Image 1 (cartoon, rainbow, N blue to C red):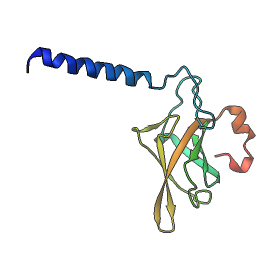
Image 2 (tube, one colour; image 1 turned 60 degrees about the horizontal axis):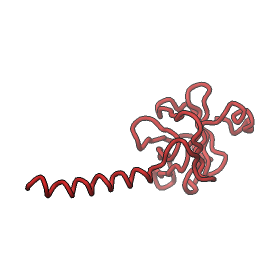
Image 3 (cartoon, rainbow, N blue to C red; image 1 turned 30 degrees about the vertical axis):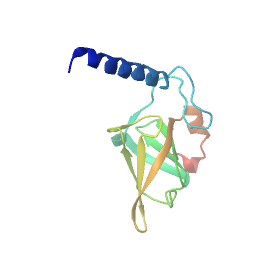
Image 4 (cartoon, rainbow, N blue to C red; image 1 turned 180 degrees about the vertical axis):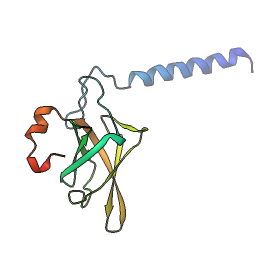
Length: 140
């Protein structure tokens, strides 16, 4: 194919790429209210292998103890039956071995009919003040 015929295709592709990149989110702004994520500061990630405990105050919220002092809150997309009663669960990352802010994880919890998979909507690291404000029975 002659170069002159490739040039218009290349130009059209380049313009489409620029137009799409203008729509991409940037780290300068905040997220939509109620999304469960905030974009102030660096990404807060943890490795799934470092989860040492958990607590579930209800069937849509999960608190994970990561290491010795960090606590992360996970908001689930939908109710995850019996997650507030289970004694074990698994955290699976969809983006490798770490979980960051946003919906990078799936919770696997044993259920009466086998393992159930519960999709995570949002992940955020709690501040020390927020951790201390949790009721003693709900701290992971």
